[in-house]
Length: 156
Image 1: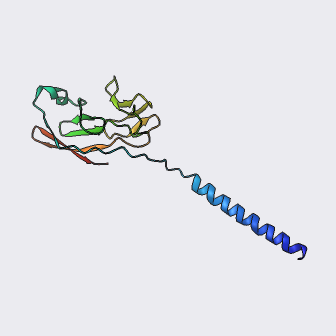
Image 2: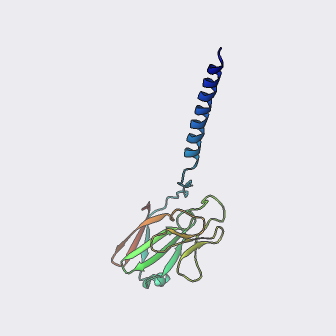
């Protein structure tokens, strides 16, 4: 074996190693965060008669009520007289952890998970602060005269 064959072999191995290293770096530096899915809990349709006294808070824009259905409960929020949102209270950040429950902040301007310090918008359920990077699960809501129907069908 002459001296040049050993150098070619070494150079080829270095090139392979460099290419493999680059591929590893490219695939390990994926910008998209890992998404841990919120568990799913099926429930029968929920009918809300808006004229009942227990739903008075839904008679004004920005009003909300807490419901027991879903995985950890539902926050039903009135954006305006024709638009209502039903958000799963299970936080989208580490949803399988015991304390991963979203509440309405004391200011009543947004929702928050006190365990991870994530905050969420009432108008679309998207995170506005904290480590959460994905929106809360939002359920289908329909309005027929003075009755809201919430189904377990997610819209996001």
